[in-house]
Image: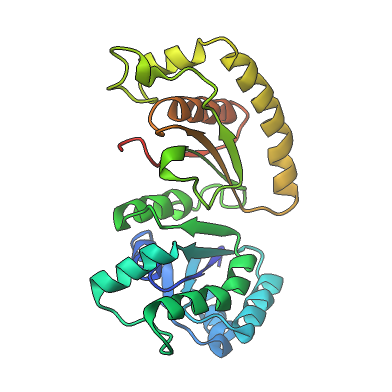
Length: 277
């Protein structure tokens, strides 16, 4: 077995979707396995499958201990935690008419109780994915970017993303840079319909006074930080750039930084959360 992935998180945050996506990506998916059976099943499956994904619903002290045990015995064990805002989880349960797995009290009480119960699992995770703003298609895209290939599986996974502050700061990012100090193409006649992926916007943003100084100093910082994160055992790092709407400046800067990181032999994934809003 080359890779073992543990997927857990809050009910309604996307575990079932994740299991289906990973299965499509070629992972051998084991769903709702009791903690006591983890060692035996993973050992049996490892003789046949290179990539195994364990999708875990309940997460108690026994499950935490078994996963720590797996981490001590298996070189490459990664853990993903899925979450979403309480309001969105309530909406999802209302839409699907599903019952929350915690039976006591009303829906809101059950969700808040599960947030507390799952806090240990979240603290153990290598990657936390907030699905509040993600539909199933977008979650599929995110998982495909992270787990769609076993190439470079031993390297730290770097994601460079963009977002709009008016739509909220993403919760699942590690480094956030505010680029609202750059002139906004939105207010320039003829540029508004384009996005930061278009050359005309990139030229406008990159040619502004101070942009290149910012990028030069930022790259010096990232070149110093990324190897340090990797040496500390980080599996994932998400670098996010935010502007007002998430369509122009943040996208242009994210694309530029990702290209610069590729020149430094990193292989960043690039995502733009709000580019189409």
